Amino acid sequence: MGQIIVAAKAQGDVLVSSEGLSFWGGVDPKDGRVIDAHHPLCGQSLAGKIVLMPTSRGSCTGSGVLLELALNGSAPAALVFREDEDILTLGALIAGRMFDKPLAVLRLGRGDYDRLAAASMARITESQLITDDWALPLNALSTDQLILSEADLAMLDGTHGPAVKLAMQTICTMAGGQDATRLTDVTRVHIDGCIYASPANLLFAQTMADMGAQVCIPTTMNAISVDHSNWRDQGVPPDFGLPASRLADAYVTMGARPSFTCAPYLLETVPAQGEFIAWSESNAVIYANSVLGARTVKHPDFLDLCIALTGRAPLSGVYHDAKRAPRRVIEVELPATHDDALWPMLGWLAGQVAPDRIPILKGLENAAPNDDDLKGLCAAFGTTSAAPMLHVAGITPEAMLAPTADSDTVRITRDDLIRVWRQFNAGDAKVDLIAFGSPHFSLAECRKLDALMVGKHRKPDTAVIVTVGHDTLSAARGEGIISRLEAAGVQIFPDICWCSISEPVFPPATKVVMTNSGKYAHYAPGLSGRAVRFGSIANCVAAACSGTVSQSLPDWLTESGQE
Image (cartoon, rainbow, N blue to C red):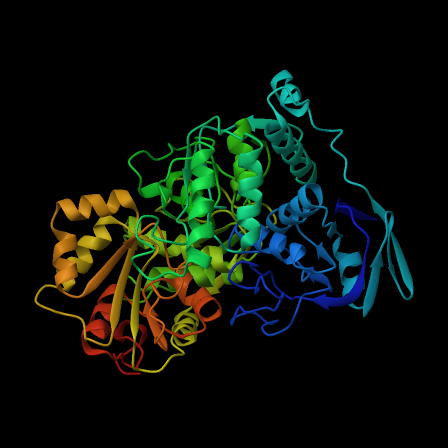
């Protein structure tokens, strides 16, 4: 018997994805076409299909993309998952509950999932999944197991207004899908839904603001889609700049702090180990759990605001001790030498071999990664895995947790690293743009770039752009770093990050973009339509000053220093 997570009638051709897909950065919100260059379904349309995938992965903003697809008539007819899934489920729930655009979401056991995957068409009713030669009964989602406090019930009854009531209804429904029996208090929220991925994000936020929504716990905001104070001077068209800034303003109106950073762990106060928080933005969630030892489920867009309005979240997933243990051991063949490019590559590979479970990486005990290395590791991991955290033996605070009884072991070898290097370096040797700051650059990274640029200047036809948070920008300006970088031809932008940047801030003439970020190396082909090169910060600086990049493997990836 299957489980109805979000109820709706549906009918369509069956389309099977062998791996998870991030709808943000992976699906065009205008027409439902898969744009993730690394995904097996790249180029195919999801519109009107019964789409099967094990679970989703990647950005929490996927819920907003699905809502936009539902509003413009380009959504899948239904989504069918084999594992737990929250991001797209929440988008479907909001589409039906707030905007009367129902979209079915089912969860099936492995046997039934595989049987449906073999069908060409399917139909979903209120109680059945039907193919040409098979019918499966479906159970409706129940929240009867959920034990609510008196304060929860008061919010659910509308005592605190319609926005809080809607928020609590949504939280309870999501809790039912997660098999949670209680809700938990959280101390802070990070909002991801302030990125203008589509008009749907603005419609949701403005609707909630018009209902009088106000956050009740400290709430920070992700990077937004424009430089809030300067987008007009930068030539951003008003038909994009106005709604993008209005989206940010809507969340500020609801009481969120305009921190505008995708790296909230770089702010002046960070969560303590064991602190229960509610963060969205995939890299932030993974960093908080993995590196800080704080606790947060990978909350989808829209649910982040619901939690900020109530201070409550479903007590599920990695909020529980037992759910934080690794289920896959990854033995890493560490090269004898390496640079900072290693860590994003390892993160991407770790996510690829652990797409649906928490791994522990072994073999890095003597590698001595710094906070920025771990930032790059976590961000890249989030592009290929649905898991909300990872462990690194000898490095991260909970790496002593014993693997689960059903865990297994895989290896990442030098050959795997070489494969990813080549996959990330598909562009031509001539580089038009260097992209730093995905996630936002830290002060330490700004200092490193400053030191590498001493006595140098970028090539006139190779742009160099760094995206940072306001706190980092202020500190770097105080140290004279910003003025020195600008004198070397480097542009510094606050508020935006590479996963939300648009033309003309993104130079329109660019054909090849180079980055030190594994996250952006993954998403850039689909988001920007450009070819990508990847390397360390030093590699990127060399390309900025010469306008070209070597086609050879770096010395540390070859046995003898020769390709």
